[in-house]
Image (cartoon, rainbow, N blue to C red):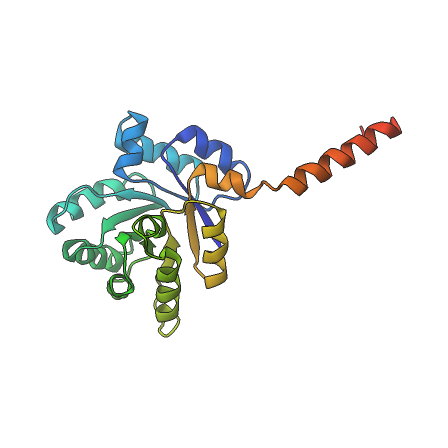
Length: 217
């Protein structure tokens, strides 16, 4: 499973990328707005830090303008993935960009039917929002199961990118279901390191080592 980081905070990205566990980054207009910085500058800086796909979202809603925005975003770096909404114009844009060799992340997916359309349009990634479905009483991870089941029946190249992740359990279930990518808020990736028995065991090892009076260095 690939791990993307869902943030536009360059300091967070640098710190987590240094672990060697980060395969890409996803951003959106809301995340960029939180930085208070120029959108294009932020995307360029992220692309310098991370070698993998960096999703940069179009803000237009019509095909013609999305194509113009995509051209400007793609020119930032070779690893930019253009993010488009799951709308008729968004998928029309996806098809055109994919045919031109550009990576595309189709976002705001909330049904398996939508995911089928995105795959037909040649999306590199489909981003189902599991947390937002959970928020309204639906089962977000069931959507991942449904999409993975359908995609397994065909030769779709589209990777399932699990988005709106709220905790480590979402990541584990996504992996069990065979999703290719999980995009994680920085705090969720940090939570994945944690277990009380790990901390307890490490404390015991260090205490025992201190009693020996030895040093490795």
